[in-house]
View 1 (tube, rainbow, N blue to C red):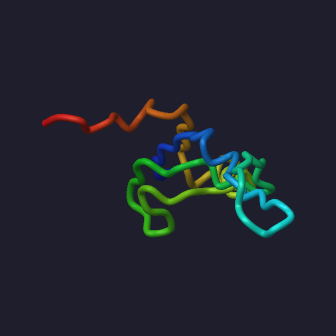
View 2 (cartoon, rainbow, N blue to C red):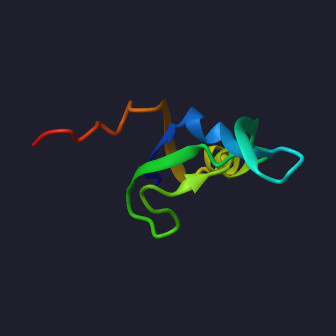
Length: 89
């Protein structure tokens, strides 16, 4: 029996803002920098498991292990594919 899990890729977690200081030590600008080991894959739904929880962020290595496992039926999608925005009732 395989457990079903839905995961979304969020590209906004691939980069982060870093403070750039001038010679006096004051923060002058912010720069976007690539993250070395991004946790850009977010768990949306999980069935019959306590290993993963919704909104848990996964790294690329964790996702590869999850996809290779025979225990899991993995569905990976882009941002907003499985989880719809809740703007109104």
